[in-house]
Image (cartoon, rainbow, N blue to C red; front, side):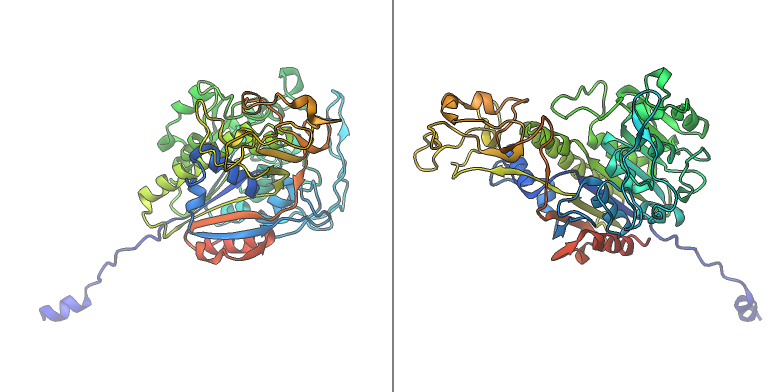
Amino acid sequence: MLAACGSDAKKEEAVVEAPPKNVIFFLGDGMGLTTMTAARIYSVGEEGALTMDTLPETAFVKTFSNDAQVTDSAPSMAAYMTGVKMNNEVISMSANTVAIDPGTDANGNKLVNKCGTGNGTPATTLLELAKAKGFAAGVVSTARVTHATPAATYSHICHRDLENDIAAALVPGGTGYNSALGTAGLDVVLGGGAQFFKPFKDGGKRSDGRDLVAELKAKSYTVANNATDFKAVDAAKTERLFGVFTSSHMSYDLDRDAAKEPSLAEMTTKAMDVLAKNKKGYFLMVEGGRIDHALHETTAKKALQDTVAFDNAIKAAIEKAKLTDPTLANTLIVVTADHDHTLVLNGYAKRTGKTAAGNPGVLGVVKNYVTGAVEKDLDGAPYSIIGFGNGENRTQASRAAMASLDETVTSANNYHQEAVIRTAIGNETHGGTDVFLGAIGKGSETFLGTIDNTKVFGLVKTAGGL
């Protein structure tokens, strides 16, 4: 009798909640292999290792766009996010989309949408797939959050320069909102670019009079305008976080005032804390955006320091992820670049060790690896270890006048390394060389060999359960 009663009783089974699946996609804008190598020597010397050097799974990535051998950031990041090859300057649209330059608005800014109707269709992004699955999602960048790389994760438009339209895509329920982000929108947005969220009368660039920051506040976003606001944010009590700390791009790490702007590592870990409250998981994109800008300027020291700051963010993210997922069994971390630049390492330079007080390191001039004597070119002048294929600082005649060039000059924060081909100021170009990809954690073993940037989309999608 007792046995029978026991067999009839319902036995409650504990429901085992599936662990969250998290993806953190790190993008070093313009971080080619020579920039990585130079940054390693700059930071830890020839024998040292950056965090990204230690990632267990690696691959080379081909970066050409739909219409160009050398890509710009828009289609290269969009290829990672959508799996679609598109034309230069196009943001996450179909391959047939034509990039049409913006028109000029009443305030003299080239921000008027001229894309027209029937000019391509949106290509679904990894971030949108994450939101559709009920995951949290966020973007972090040291560039404007409306710039090409972050924009490619959450917006769709024919030209990357339409940053007013791109900003509007972030505001839930507003005109121009990207409904593929769900009713609530992104959970975290951190970086620069306040000008595209403010009306012209308030110092912004919006000609429509909208104050998107006020609109986001009305949608229950916690807003941080400076480092003090940012540090005061309690992630445990914050559902959605929006922070733009500068009018345009954030400062180079060499120039950053920590009292005004958080570091990339700080923004990354705060974003992870906010996103981690979602029990299904999250997708976070983190961009070291200013590496690219320093390379365009041919100010190598700034580029290398920003690469180190990017690497610090990777280290911080891995350490934080392991606190709750020690073996990263449910966390995929991918580190890559969207394209190369023309930075080169010249000559047969003697080993320099890391850059420190009294030692310019890789920022110095080439010295003979046997004698240590300063090497000279055919004009009898020294030359720096780092140079560029093209850029603004090109000697127009004999370099004999540069016989006094020394390391106090070449290692300065604002020194523009010499270039072979002269360009306009700030217009050093991207390069077309394959870029590095490193991965660790869930599904990372699938990243191997030489792969097209569009293939990365599928690998991340599968590993992240998207």
